[in-house]
Amino acid sequence: MTISFSCECGKKYQVADENGGKKSRCKTCGAVIVIPEAPSETPLELTAIDEVPAEEKPTAQQKEKPATPEERMDEELKETFGKASSAAKKGAGRAWDGLKTAGEMAKTGKKLAALNLELNRICRELGSAAFEQEMLNPKTMDDGGQSLFRVEGTRKRMEEVKGFIEAADRRYTSASGAKEKALAAKDIAAAKAARKKAELDLDKAHQNLGEYVLRFCMEPEGKAEALQRALEIEDEIKETKQDISDLGGVLYKNKLGAAAVVLIAIILIYIVLKVVF
Image (cartoon, rainbow, N blue to C red):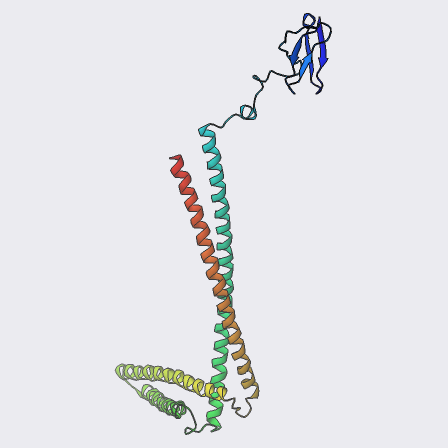
C-alpha cells in the first residue's frame, strides 16, 4: 500500500504506508511536509512519482550533444563554400553587366563613327561650294588662307595629272612594239595613282574649307539644308561622346566590382583547400 499526497506548491508525491506521519522536505519548493496518517518525527527522503531525481535529470548541455571536431569542420566548410559561391555569383553578375555595357559602348562608338563620316562629307560639300562661289578671302581666314591655297594647288595638280594620263593613253594606242606599250601602260598606272592621291588631297582640302565655313556659319548658295544638317550633327556628336564617357564610367565600376568579388571567392576557396588538405 502507498500514500499519495501533495505539497502546498502543488507537487505530488507517493510513499509506502508505513511512512505515514513522518516529515520530509519538498524537492520543488523546499517546504517541510508531514506525511498523512502516521505521525512521526523522523524525516523521510521522498521520491516523486512524476519526475526523475534531480541528480539524474539531464541538463540543457547534456541534452545537446556537443559536435565532434569533424562535424565542426564540415559546418565551417559548408559555410565557407556558401560564401564563396555567393561571391562568385555576384562576380559573374557584375561581369555580365560589364559585357552588356561594353556592347552598348561599341554600338554608341559605331554611331559616333557614322556621324563623323557624314559630317566630313557635308564639310567637303560646303567647302567645295564656298570655293566655287569665291566666298572666302584668304586675308580674313585664321590660317592665312592656307586651306584655300591648298584647294587651288590640288585642283591644278589634278588637271596636270589628267593631261599626263591622256598623253600616256595616246602613246599606248600609237605604240607598235610590246616594249613601248609596256612603258606607256606603266606611265598610265603611275598617273592614275597620282590622280587618286590628288583626289584624296582635294577632299581633305575641301573638308578643311567646309569646317571653316561651318565654324562661322557661312551659307553657300543652295547649301542651306546641308549647313543646317551639319550643325545638327555637331550637337549629336557632343551628346554621343558624353554617352560614351558615361558608359565608360559604368564599365570601369563593373570591372572593379567583378574583380573584387571574384578575388574574395578565390580567397575563400583557397582557405577551404588549406583546411582540407
